[in-house]
Image 1 (cartoon, rainbow over the protein chains, first blue to last red):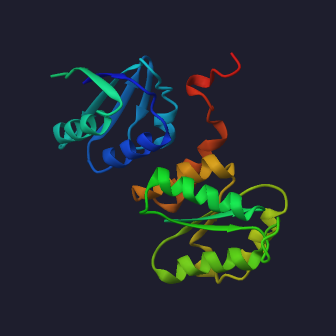
Image 2: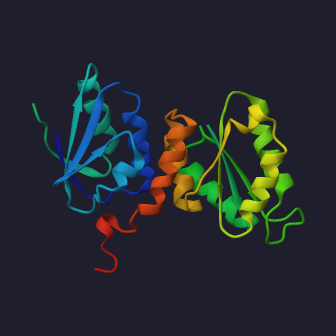
Length: 87
Length: 138
C-alpha cells in the first residue's frame, strides 16, 4: 500500500507500529524513497526520516502478510492518507 | 525484560520512566533509580541494587541498566558486585545514552526481545539523528 504521512512518525506512534508489526510472523518492510526499514525495529523505523508529506510504502512477506497489512494500515490511519493498496 | 534507569537526578530518572512507559506502554517494567538516598543529586548503589534484585527475584525477566555519566557507573558497579553469578548473568549494563537508549530498549523489550537484542537496540541510540534525516544543522 502507498500512504502519505501527515504528521511525521514520532516516537509514540512509531512504537505502537513496531508493536503491531511484531504480532505477525511476516517480514514487514517500510520504504520511504530509497530508505528501507524493518517494521519490527524502532531505530530502523526512526531512521526512515518519515515526515509531513512523505510517501511511504508498507510491504509484508509471509504466511500472515495480508492480515499484517490490514492491521498496519489501521494502525497508521490516524497519521496518513491512504493512496492506493498494492495488489 | 525490564529496565532500571540510573541518573544523578531522581526527577530525571522518574520523568524518563514516565516518558518511556508512555512510548512503550505499560507492558515493560521500568524502575527509576536516581538520586541519593536522601533525594539529592548523586547516585546510590543500594537503591540500584534493590531495583535490580527486585526484578530478578520476581520472575524470569532479565535486566538492562541504563545510566547517565560520570560516577553513575561506580554505583552501578557496586550494585552488581552484590549479585550472585547467576543473578549477574541476567543483567546487562548499557553503554547507550540514557534517554534515547531507554526508549529504544523499552520498545524492543515490549515486543519480547531478548536481553542481547534489547541492549543492541539501545546501543543504536548513539547514532540516531534528532531530526528526520539529520537536517537540523544543514
